[in-house]
Amino acid sequence: MEIAFPTSTEPSINPTESGGRLINCYAETAPEGSRSKVIYRRAAGCDFAFQAGSDAPRGALKVGTILYIVNGEKCYSVTKSGGIYTVNELAGTVGGEGRVYMAHNMRSPTNQILILHSAGFEQIDGSDVEPFSDADLPASNSLSFMDGYFLTTSASGLSFASDLNDTEFNELNYARAEAQADPLVRGIPFRRYFMLMGTSTTEFWSNVGNATGYPFSRGPVIPFGLWGPYAVAGHEADFPGPLVWVASDNTVRQLNGYSPDRISTPHIERMIEAVTDRTELRAFVYMAAGHSNWVLKSETWTLVYDLSTGKWHERRTHQRDTWRMEFGIKAFDEWLVLDEESGNVYRINERSRREAGLVVPVTMISNQQHSFPARVPVRLASFDFVTGVGKDTGISPIETEPVVSISWSDDGGVTFGN
Image 1 (spheres, rainbow, N blue to C red):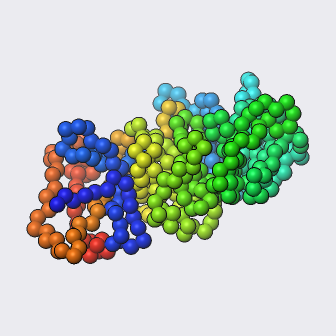
Image 2: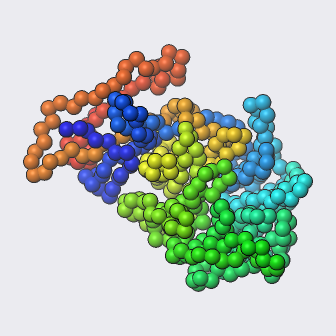
Image 3: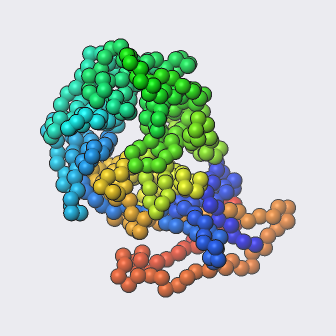
């Protein structure tokens, strides 16, 4: 009987129901003629790139060749030349608490940059962070950019558009999402549409060149909203998509045309349902070795959906229950992630065996072997390893003397031996 390991992590409420788990690794189809039908790869490591401040990160935005990072109440600009990162602290402070939304327009010769936070707006002007306000704007809960316009949303169901490539907002340049009377959670620019995502519906608006007022007009509406403001990703620059979000019914949905295809399992949906704080779930993306990864984090777990294979796996930082990284963003031709607890920024590296200096231990739990009501005697378990693949000049001991530990359970995965 073959010991079957899963190709997608399948935890459940009870260990005896589990379909196997993949932690810090993912499955690929093996080449034809390989020793196995499936190859399991270690999840990409994270190499230190630079430090921008020392507080928890709040947001990041790439503008041309400059990366802006908000960390605590400070904003930093980062450039890279000749392999060297240069980090500068901008004058002024960013108000509010929690995550920020950042967006820039296409104004020439210098793009304008706005920052939205829980207490209002700031703008970046050269090397300064300055207060920004507009009397025509109501209290906003998201900020984005599309087709030359800054776009905001509000819990009252309104979306405002700025003047073309300007930060000025006109009190008449707004639209109301009114397919249903659900408050707006966030606006997402995705391909040709600006998606107004409410608590129970999502409306697709497209730029039809309205001469006056709001430049977009409403199109299709789907009966799935956004679970929380940060639980959506896939629309980021340099990421091929598709858009994936936690929907209002506790499912994870992938946009296929106008179809919100369900990609979550029942247990993942139970995990989501158990989270009570709507700001706790955070989604972001990154790419490594040709795999497009969509990450969903809570305070106690991290799940990754591999869009290239349609499979799930889990990520954990060593000696933690969840992954420490946040805010995937492509800058300087590399995918960067921000440490949730510090100002450190790391570079995703498929070949790295380390994450922020720590090991990246892989855990694979097989499916259960059973033949009820018959009994299954286990006289021998065989494992086929390739030996002598350590590196004399590698990291000691994880590369010079790599180790695999094997343990088994006689009670359906409730306990394992040493």
